[in-house]
Amino acid sequence: MRTLRNIRFWTIIALSEIVGCKKPYAPTITASNVSYLVVDGVINSGQDSTIIKLSHTVNISGNVNASPELNATVTVEDDQNATHPLSDAGQGKYVSAALNLDTTHKYHLHIRTAEGKEYLSDYEAVKYTPPIDSIGFTIKNTGVQLYVNTHDANNSTRYYHWDYSETWKFNTKYQALYITDGTKLRLRKSEEQIFTCFANDVSSTIILGSSANLSRDIIYQNPVTQIASTSEKLETKYSILLKQYALTKDAYTFWDNLKKSSEELGTIFDAQPTSLKGNIHCVTNPSEPVIGYISVTNIQQKRIFISNDQLPSTWRTIYPYDCTADSLLFGNSKPDVVDQFLIAIPPADFGLGPITDKSGQLLGYVGANAQCTDCTIRGTVKQPDFWK
Image 1 (cartoon, rainbow, N blue to C red):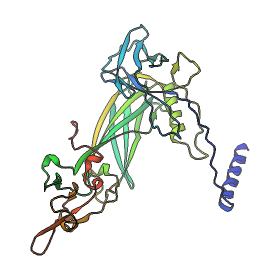
Image 2: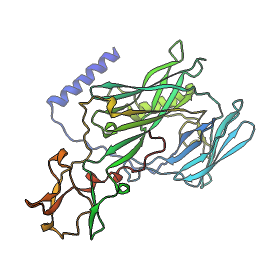
Image 3: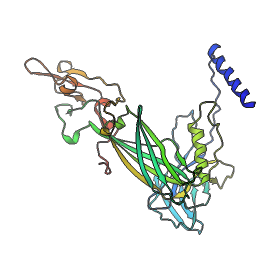
Image 4: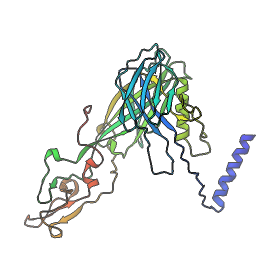
């Protein structure tokens, strides 16, 4: 009955919004200078690097997007008092080369800040991460859905966490064939091309999977990310490097609650905000909250490529900027001093080209702004070593 009353209540609210008058409501937000430590990373027990990022929470209404914890001392310690120091890489990042930890021991993270505050994570046993079986994708009307398959033949993993980095090759809207040093215009050399670049991004959502309710420890086509059919990520070639982590049940609960609190709010049917209980504690002030959960595991990873010729030929990329080519005539400027981003548009593609009179005398060029002609604004011309 209580559920039914709630449904009626919300129905009345919805109807009143439709037929009644609406008044703007601007809630008062209480400013707060509270800043909690955020610990992000995994103690890598295998042959890859351990990377721990330390930062502080910031006010939503503030102008600061990130507040890294600088000049801290960070070590990995085991239950036999052996220590493994992490190097300060700057910007709140602390790293160590492969630790190759003894899987019979337990480990925790020890943090001492420049202000003298001390933090410890709980001791955690090393949890083995099985390999990724495959990364695949399905073609939908709106784009590409990427997914992951994995399994543990020993049925001992059950809880999984993934993140990824992605790279794609893209072209600018127009090709800048010419370059100037301010006194002379000439064709660009091959090493000066700014038409084709590579861009990168990393996952910004929490990706989880669990086989706890299944008889066998198998993850089948667990969603990873979606790419719109109009995205320039799919214009030429796209690559994703997926990393897989095994979690304990407690770690999975933490990440699941964080996902619900940060990504799934907005309607009356979504999960309500909840306190996040991690496994990291402030030793110098036990009442101070700390955000994060430190797991100890090896990391498995796999990379795939998706080429444009694997996708529907009807898909068309939408360029992220509004671009318009315009005529730049010598009569409107000095003949030998022209904009750095002048472009010559191939006639076969656009029906335009260098502007000439009936006798073939060059009168000017077609030009566009930097966002439409210079790919280095958003990427790099250097091809990654892994690219193929």
